[in-house]
Amino acid sequence: MSDDGARVSGIYRRADLYADIYAGRGKDYAGDAERITALVRGRGGGTASLLDVACGTGSHLAHFRDSFAHVEGVDLAEDMVRVARRDLPGVPVHTGDMRDFRLGRRFSAITCLFSSIGYLPGPAAVEAAVACFARHLEPGGVIVLEPWYFPQTALERHVVGDVVAVGGRTIARVSRNVREGAAHRMTVHYIVAHPDEGVQHFTDEHVLAVIERERYEKAFTAAGCTVEYLPGAGPGLFVGVREAG
Image (cartoon, rainbow, N blue to C red; front, side):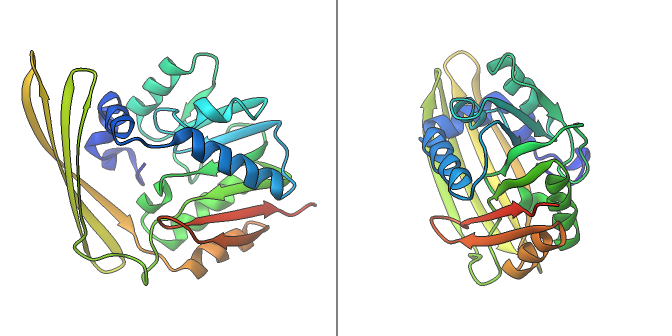
């Protein structure tokens, strides 16, 4: 979720709250998993195993395990790992940095979704992460990576707001981003209200690198993968296939 443990944003230290926000917003984890599984199969990838990098609370993994014989996850934020392990008993979920984790095995498919790679500080870090993914991928295996926005698609001073009610809590989330050089700085305000616990407010800061499409593609090529970019809702997807040999 970040480039080092000290910079894990506050919401990722409150994993249950994070899960409630996206459940309340209607995030379609099942639909995502179905589409990505189809992409993997369509590129000739197998369904023996899948690793979800920056897996968060495991909401995608909960659906990937319906299609893959074995699934695992890795995330930098310890509280996200705690909730994923709690909610997915029997699924290995590891704590690690996406640039240099070492799991001692390879997978048929690797995913990195929700623009989590945007938290890395720049192109060199993205190259390190994609190289790490490729080291954990079987020949012919498939990487599906959701980037953050490119310079030409990155919105300036964009505001988003939501109010959800989940599990007795009402949660308001309002965000605004600004461009700071080659990055977005997103300020997010949360108000959490509960009948017994009262009202809490906290503010979170997220810094996400704005990187050219070509630099992502270079990272895949350097890691020994073919790559294609699929535009779509949000920032789109990169799909890489590790070359044999």
